[in-house]
Length: 218
Image (cartoon, rainbow, N blue to C red; front, top):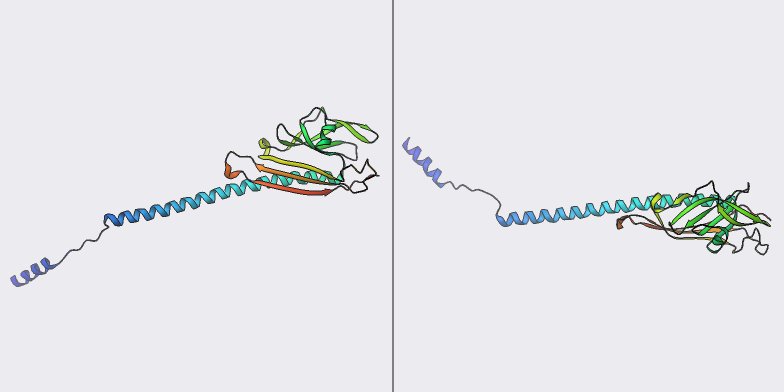
């Protein structure tokens, strides 16, 4: 029995207990790797979030602008154009801040138009009262019982207009000038930007469409 106890003591003394763990260098390396991965993940998430914001603002801008272009195109197709562009607008509209316009008359002789307010940087739809002399409409004013309907504006739908042109072909109105025997076509050239204080959301679009009028009186 004594011999057995001695042998057990000898075995116990010969056993080497090994303890495994992380050294300080290994801990620093692990922390550094984790920090790099976390930074990359954070950067990827931030980029994804920014792209989502820009995509959303771009889509909202495009939807609002295309909707307005469809409205203008429908009016051009179905009505008689009486004024357009920059120079004629100042001759037709009285007492307004409108520098560009596309005015038309409907079959019921109701006059209306799309006008650009340069002071408030907005595109409006207006109903007008005009005088008429030998078939030519003059001195158009916004009807006293009507208020302009805002179509595009920074405050209304986050659309900032950076460029707008109404171009009628031929250059003279064929309804009143026999020298131009052409079907009138209106080209709408519109540049817009999403209005936001965050640069990442400031998407922009350039839209252009050409529409022919179905109305051609001789």
